[in-house]
Length: 447
Image (cartoon, rainbow, N blue to C red; front, side, top):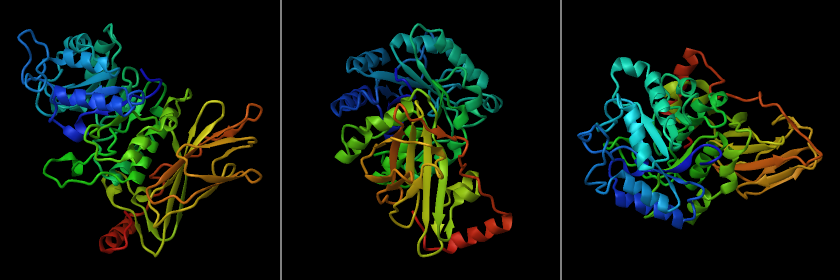
């Protein structure tokens, strides 16, 4: 198991129910061929692996067409590739696709899944009655106890879509819990999840993590993941880079979903996914998730994340003048007084160079003899006398990350309380209405 949040690959984002034993083994072998297996060791089979009915003795069983050799055989073959393997069920009577789930069978299903040799279990919230949905915590806890009683260690992921605060009730028995409803492959959805989850950082601790959902890098999906909605182009390289960086900085599980066999990606994406130093930020012994430290804006910018909560955050931010800047700095405490710093050009009108002071902007100091490492190799300048870092030009939706490590004889103090929630700025209802009107008629929008 990893010393930090789970990393791996899941069938759902790219394949939904179009899965089979052959597909799983092809993806596992591709993970190994791409030399990603040590970074993303879990291969997770999501919904639709089950037969339409349980066996005569009550056990879940594999779909005989998709998995004719059974799930134990699949697990053994994935293990033979040097990878770990995960499975899916739901806490209710049925899965989200209407197949048999685990309500009333938690101990039996935990024993069955353990006996098959699985290492990870994602548990959804479908198939409960209305009353049960209002308070799913007892059912998730029952499954947690059932998994804990097995001889095999099984990582437990609670997929409660952020409803009823799983970060509160699941912390004692689950390795991770979803903070929101499903992700889909648009960058504004990625950022909406980030904005909501940032304030949940205090609930993320060693071995227990906020799950921001699976990565959409390289996934060619649909709006809201509904089959009848239009296809969405995959995230751009810069969006993918920011997506991966934010998940690593925020200590989220990192679960890929792209097709690893018929790659519609170039070597740059494989290189991006291979950034071990970035991924290892989430394995730092302090296990501190990143916080938004600073927001810098210029120009007549309307940024919904500043003004709204909930659904209205999905409105695009727009520049109401010829040029706007919208840059964020995120910081993550590391062991030995070190600090990881992400500079994120969230949506400026164009590329931006950013200067920031370790003392005044990051509240990090006094420092001397700092070892500054650029994890993406983008380039920077450092003024030792003034303690100011200057980035290279960062494109819109682009990002770069530095680690700041003091020499043994030099220690730095970081005031981690200075963070900014996305919804720190509020407007009166009249101003909100006016801004909505402006947004509707505006043609000068930023992606």
